Length: 170
Image 1 (cartoon, helix red, strand yellow):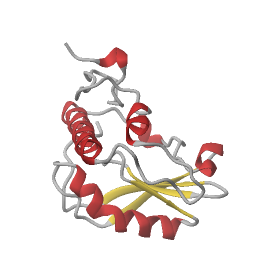
Image 2 (cartoon, helix red, strand yellow):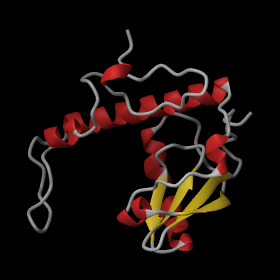
Image 3 (cartoon, rainbow, N blue to C red):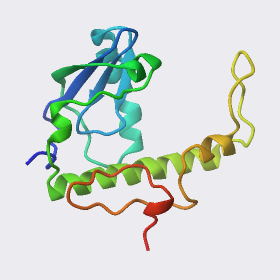
């Protein structure tokens, strides 16, 4: 069964999602740690460069090992739009109870970091070069989650995802 404890000094399992426009390097055991570039090597370099920022957002043991590409999948229109979307055989691996709890803990860490940053951001955010962009409250609203930190309950066969209105815990 996959998704058990992760050796912080062992290799960081990565897959490449290769589209026509973008290639993503995605850390399999570290949800949210993914970067894009125009080639596989550039995406891996971006992922490595982003390691410290990812570490700062989670309380799990550090991912200090080298990046190790374990597979590659073809991208799709979403990939070329700029978001990872393809599925690989590793997505079918069931999570162990330890792996499931680890995923929930990483998700909680992400929401705590998001809440901390959102609460310290000014209500009016700097607009882009062409005047586009949203203000803080509009950005927060796009997350589609109820107010307050909540995390969906996990169970057999369920991977944690962003909390939504139906996932509030009681």
